[in-house]
Length: 451
Image (cartoon, rainbow, N blue to C red; front, side):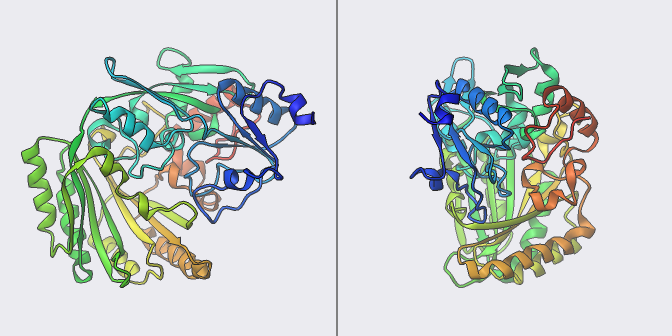
């Protein structure tokens, strides 16, 4: 028996060393650009395994990373030389349809949640890509197709079960450790390992209205202006994303796409979909009645696991004509056909939650903008990353002070830091950090230093 087995005699999962045949597959996260090598990977099967892994790392002074879905573009789910706590085996979803509640383990993906909840005609806000992990998305916010109607993923949380830095297990809710419950709703993975989540569910589906419509290169600016006008008075039932991308036929043509979800009355949804199609010349029409599970998976193929990704993001309080022109020009210069620019409109229920109610601070109406560099050929790296940086720099005159924490990469964190992510809630977060993680054991995140 080796030293690790002796130290973790009751561990039910697997502890992988670099020599293990599964090590390389497990250590790799969604972003192919991330190539870190932990000294150990603890593949947990339950809460007791997480407790043992945290204790082992603490006692042996190993840096901890926590992998839920592994989707974070910055690669914070994996550590170089430390211990990676892998929750990907913990992905059960239990739905209590009568109480409209879902209990979701920390390694589950949103497609797992949607599949189970939709059996009962229920749903909760959860991402726009089905392969995204529940834990990371929720702890940092949780933008998704239902956010205008039901708020963010974290706005629908009832409770979170956490393993803290000292190895204790707590349930954080409005009635139990309310200060911790406040902090984890927007404070990311700063406070412990989230073993499971309890969400409120809402009646929805199995069918909704939405999908994607695309428009030709000469009409990109026109379409963005029309979409901006539509979103000014958009109802809570309607959530939409605009995308500047390359045509899927391989031609490289720079097109505009409008993706949408309308979960309101059928007549209103039809009118909204038809209005989108009136923005210009529709060259691809995939809008209409669609199963909610299909809507949540329609973009999955555009974000393949292992593709190289380099992103920068910003929040635009308004989408001015000058900002649109900047985006159109940058889009035309994009060197990679799999790279694109996304504008996620924020309005409705998200903006009506008081700033102090949760740690999440991006509560203003506006446009969360993502410059998404993605490529498959390693030779495209320099040109694509240069394009992302240049586009981000040119957008600076239009950018507001807040940032969406789930899009802040380690590179950006040097300049942006916790203040842009947590804003006026940062000081309260620091006090919570000092109480629950005074030695900053959990620091592979947009880190909050203990007060």
